[in-house]
Image (cartoon, rainbow, N blue to C red; front, side, top):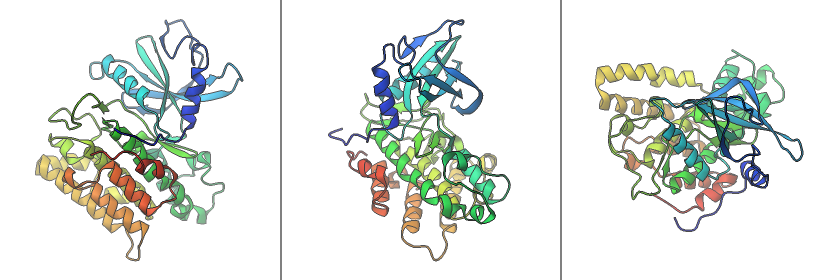
Length: 374
């Protein structure tokens, strides 16, 4: 890969460095281990699910530091092997997570097997995911429910009618940071010949001061191969966020990730333009509409129609008086959603364009300094 600027140290990196100094790591017995049914790991496990990561259920797990009694929250993802998701897939995800070291990617703390289930410990245990946050923003703006995550994130401190009506302006500077944070994470994994293969809002975690890419259970590591292009294999991602070539059985590449990232950008951009995801779905359709169109039009025409409706929406939401950065983001999204993968920008080019539009974005500085890859 050549020389590369190492991502700035993160809370995850600091935590992992600290754990390495402890005898027996987090468990006192090792970073990865097995417990019998009657043993108790040194964790206080929450009872309520805080999410579902791929094939697993996610809960909060509180670990107490043995040296200073500080309580640290991990996210514990529990996966029971099955015919559709065998143990080798779980082990592959853990192996991949252990290779990743980036401040906008969740950190692998450790894992343990118990009672036929593998439990994966990740950091941080974030406030919510981007999908839940966007849903709350839409509901608050429509007056359907009061904010919860916005308070927990510290993005707002009071609620009144004017505040909720102007949410895009109030939280916009925080929310739009997701563009740079997640692009830098995608550039990082692409430079390591890894494709995520399931980029979507629910796989982006939101914490008080940052965004994190998570859920690598269907990701693929091409480090030992000459090419990151794969031919006609089964698609394991999420259909509504998939690139056309993934659903039509054509060759897939890192540019397929870029298409999915473009759809995430489009949802964030939609809110920042004062529109809701419901507005967008009413115009471009939902997953159920996609199924109906496929039956009526056939797979290829269906995906072309769906992509065209997304491109039209990206243009429709922009007010006539818009200029500067707004038009820049719109044009970037249009490029990322190109039907032909060859016409989409690489992660490096997306990062470079974002850095040009907003040089003050902190994470873009290190991202564009990374070695350019195809």
